[in-house]
Image (cartoon, rainbow, N blue to C red; front, top):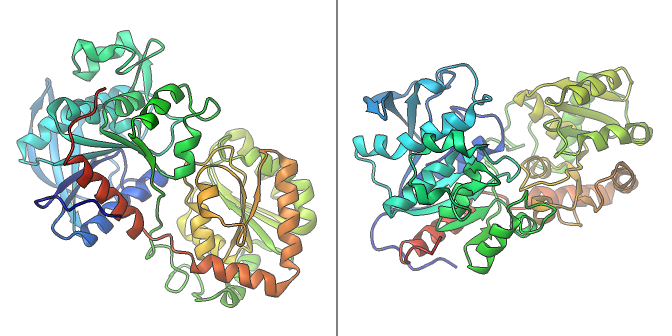
Length: 461
């Protein structure tokens, strides 16, 4: 239910380290490329702005609005407008190098967090609500709180926290001395920028309801479960499921595939994928993923000797060098195809041409791949964790509880058995394609949250 409407047009500022299509390394950029635009469309009187670093590799040419000196360093701010959203890019010398992320990111994002609000002041940007995303925005949230701004902080992945030795890093932050205690940004002798966002935000969200529950436990809480449990008891932690960009991922209009509107139309995309990789007529089980421990890709690797009895296996991804080498070695098998790195047109062809999609994640805050797969009528084989629980119904996908290769193998066998019944498989695929994972619902929930915060006092931190 929507909260009572705020009495004037809201000014919402999102702050994140990346935003599609200007800068992107993963799902965070996708969220910031979609959610603000939907919010602006749903509430046309709401002013939606996104602030992100002005990387040297930025895919776009912002118009410079302001240039000056803040904290002894040259700082500048540029603007692009797209889809009803104002995108602002904060320029600092530390971000003038190739790529998005580097080993000194804690220091770099402290500089970003310290300069963000003063730079906005210089150009007259005065938000009512500041919505920070992940640890890179944690310090901005802390400074916004000190100014009395209402703040939301979204955890996209709790594993990455932005930690550095507090003795060395305290001077980077611009925070008052009292903020460096255990109730503030200190974490076992370190500065922790994720904890800064959690501690100072008026409300904390995660990107799925199940993940919001999981991170209050020692298994998934990454050492912050005590703080997160306290936020839950205070009514300051909730989960809002991510959505999916319905235009970018649409089998009916996708320019990278032979378009189709129902499961029966997938045959052409499947034939194209098999031809591209030289595969036989067995069904295709695919994965498009970072090759990382979190994603359980080592489990998929271990299960390959069993999986190839029933499936062709297609993997697109990059990351861990050992996993990359192992999948490269397997690519000589006639039923295994491996493409290294991230290639979006190829990803579209894989989502469309595969029959099933494997996500054996050890944890998954929300997950995007399973949403895309279902939109393309490709049935997920997923571990029961985080957003995979919230998005993959038993009537559509094949879920397993334990993070083991054996559990993945068993669920894949169940999927293969279902594939042998074309009527059952088509019914599952049709249901998958009918599910609504648009951003409209989540965008309404965030807007209602902002409105509720604008009518309340700050909580105690």
